[in-house]
Image (cartoon, rainbow, N blue to C red; front, side, top):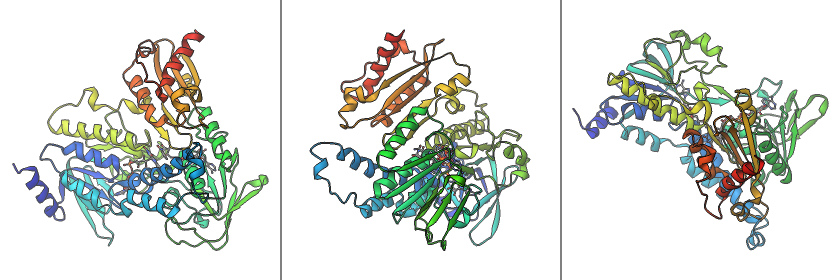
Length: 507
Ligand SMILES: Cc1cc2nc3c(=O)[nH]c(=O)nc-3n(C[C@H](O)[C@H](O)[C@H](O)COP(=O)(O)OP(=O)(O)OC[C@H]3O[C@@H](n4cnc5c(N)ncnc54)[C@H](O)[C@@H]3O)c2cc1C
Ligand SMILES: NC(=O)c1ccc[n+]([C@@H]2O[C@H](COP(=O)([O-])OP(=O)(O)OC[C@H]3O[C@@H](n4cnc5c(N)ncnc54)[C@H](O)[C@@H]3O)[C@@H](O)[C@H]2O)c1
């Protein structure tokens, strides 16, 4: 048996000639990387990741990392402006945009994935460059940039981890106007003076926050629904709307874009203003003209050219909004032989990096167990979190952190719902963070069991608070027991005590 070091060396030398691996992963984003790692970790089994762009996926280069790098500078500056002793010392000229974009670029490794490839090789995983599609059971075709195609096979498992891309709605003139998508707005090189953001979900609200912070002078956000952040508790969207408006944004809710027109559209590369002024028409409700339009209206799974018909999956995927249907072991439903899995965004369960990585860990563990001849039946081999305990943080100002079910979702699920809310600004530890603190917390409780089924915290410091609620939900801690989990003073966590006190007073 070769040592790990020998095996890694052989893997790197042999991967161009080799055509069979134990595990073949399509897509090298965070979900695919974790599935490959957990499938072979500590063994001599072989795995390959087939990647058409950059190993590390959307998250590393065009999503989580650049957006959070931009938002950090914007948020720190905003907090400082609200603190006596600091506010007056800050330059009136605002942020040093070049330096902020430079820091962003260090977090995306200047769109160079060699560090991620080194990690993969070090973990015993080969990397093949090219676009992959299924050609039959355990068989994958890979087409490289020059157009040559080779066929690779998997002895044990194939994992689909091809993620999603930005949806550009079918609005007349929109595609022709060359709108910015999440890739451009996270990798912006120019700050347009006037921007229209289409959509009011997580991408739109975060992008509006950093665009305003970087100096956009006129920002209009157009959402077709009645709320921002439509999947969160309604008060979260309200607080974010108020905050965006306080910074000068115009938020238009319940508006439908009917047409988009642009003078001389020209593709100048990612993050560059793509032509002359662009006008977004809102039917009889007027129009808005800006220097750039950002489309943030949701995601489309990368399944259209994945060869699903070769394994009889085309109809099942089409009937699942284009997402690959999986069971709780992340095994693709409708395919026999226990060889096909799908993890991360592409299965549509929870479009978040941490959830994709969690699913990757589970799928990898199932593959490894089955390779050992085991049945993979225990709890460690099941995705138990995606249904009822998905944590998510929207890094707006104020932050929105939530886990589990909203009140509406809990009622729809038939839970005997009890709720309790508290003004986070009235918590000493929160009010210390900034003088203009705004926030609110809400718990959704199953009255029948005294268990928490959902929690939402809006306000500075919520992001790091969230895990306490996730632990309470997953660990099935009753609210009676939470009374004895004493939060430190003065911290934002003290909101737990206030929520429990409020509940006691009400009952
Ligand atoms: C602007 C923005 C900000 C976000 N911020 C956060 C955040 O803060 N926190 C969070 O948890 N989530 C965030 N998300 C969501 C997060 O980016 C995704 O949930 C995550 O990237 C999904 O990981 P994945 O591995 O499933 O897919 P991806 O990261 O999309 O990776 C899929 C990979 O597959 C490759 N691929 C696709 N098709 C093929 C093919 N046929 N052959 C070979 N390779 C292929 C792609 O090139 C890509 O590298 C954000 C999303 C956006 C758009
Ligand atoms: N911080 C984070 O964790 C983070 C950040 C960004 C994205 N994400 C993930 O990425 C996913 C996708 O985010 P998203 O914001 O692109 O999608 P989304 O589904 O969350 O929001 C899209 C919004 O666009 C609106 N919309 C759709 N078509 C429209 C139209 N024609 N005109 C106006 N509005 C329209 C929808 O009503 C919805 O409110 C999120 O659900 C989240 O899971 C996470």
